[in-house]
Image 1 (cartoon, rainbow over the protein chains, first blue to last red):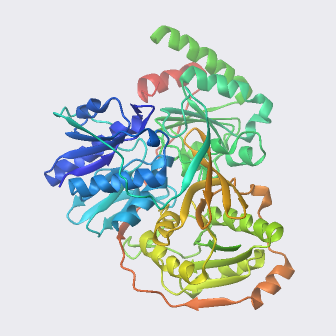
Image 2: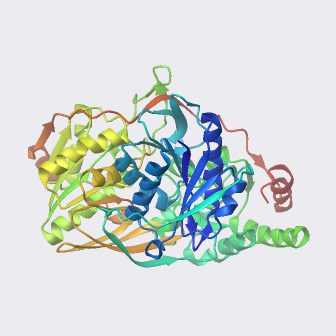
Length: 322
Length: 246
């Protein structure tokens, strides 16, 4: 009866959030006096999970599952739940995982608590703290079912080293026919660039940039910092930037270590969506902009002057500090 | 094609969030309720299917009589008929079970719900509903085309998008992108008048056991004062030495 964690990988390599959810699973297992089993798909670096408290990996090797498929992945995870007799399943908050989580929940009749921000309040009854109302509040949610699914918020718990002896089982995908018939036709994804979901730093800009032609400096600033770029809702509605960059209540949530908001006044919906970020910096020429009340650091000034200066300063800083 | 749009009745996005009864309940005092934004994108896409492909559009909401104004608004936007499942929505799992009954009884080809509601952010109702009714499921859907039984859809993925093919019957977790913000409709007087005459059927709930319970709520700790830097040099220094984020 171990804790089962789904560790996501891409082209064989674990995503950053895999080590975070493994660490979370390890914390839960310690509270329950049990061990952690991970399930992965076509991973080539299974042993690395031993650094984060995982003692066994079930690696599903199947070329048919090279591309994520919510139905087939959920079937294989459900199979692993049965074979390990796991009562607690730990998942990440990636878009793919939020796609399969409800399928798994239905398959196992398991209560699912998403957006969980810390180790369980208690494991008997099983109660977790999660964000609700788009980060404007928290709920302490009790999961009443026999099998429990916990979705851990991005960057909320962190990865914690906990060296553990590990064994790896390579298995084939379950032949259980999936009821979810979808086929991937084409994936359009920027490679080699940080995404809003897993970037340590996000550089975001709003209507204060005056037009899409002025985004060069935002992208340059993001490049210097190794950051992902994001934007406010009006900017995406105006078509200045793609929808995928819209962050806020109806867009993507941000939970980065550093969030830099440039020319964004800070509507309540925007603030809700980015409030899980640890350090927030605001650059705005309006000292009355509501975002200053929600920020940690700020500069009152014209973005068109401040951002180029910041790029130069950071380049010099990077050259000096490596 | 017969479409069901599942609509959640949620606080307006500008609402201040407070809790009451010893922090065990959401305080609805002074709160304006609206159609969940992610559901509204789905409803508007359903209107497109109605106008271009002759689809019939029904809506369903789980809730007490207080959710009816929000449902009437959806009817005023153009849905043909509504079903209210007469029980308080508690957790996502039991809401999905209630909706599954409506789906089974109505033999729908397409069910659209929001990717998540902006109140409890569960994000599970469409997926659980798809499993319970043996329908295909596409989440975070930002484009949806239907030709006969064939579905072509685009879903958002971290850092990009994925184009998928599938088939009806299908459940979609919708969001912005299904239609643009500028496509959303404000009901006109004629729509509002017509909505009053459309059927809003009250359905009694089935016994569905709760899978999760929100026992207590709290609010984030108040934010400290912002530190304003006089120069870019000072800002970089603060971020490096104090916040230690660069």
